[in-house]
Image (cartoon, rainbow, N blue to C red; front, side):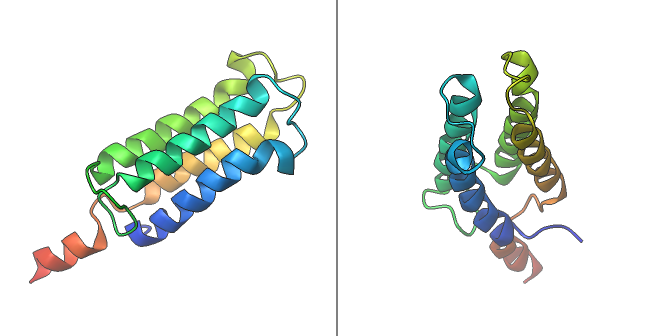
Length: 122
């Protein structure tokens, strides 16, 4: 069974907020890339979620496969960022865990919104 796009949409907005808040929640808001990578990615997740053609999108211009590609790419970038940007000796676990969850979520989500599947079934 695949994750419905409606549930994925809810997770998107939660993930965006979590990414933005994570430096303060997990105690690495000391400045530098370790703080700004998740904040920037979280803002990006919120922005492209608003434009995604799924149940919780407002503008509905970005197709679901493109959205999931951005999710997977962002998750990989987040997970690799501690080593790519040289802050792995200070903090790495939140970046890797949240990045991995983002990649897995993208991989298991339906690529067609529920309302499209229902319309096709008629």
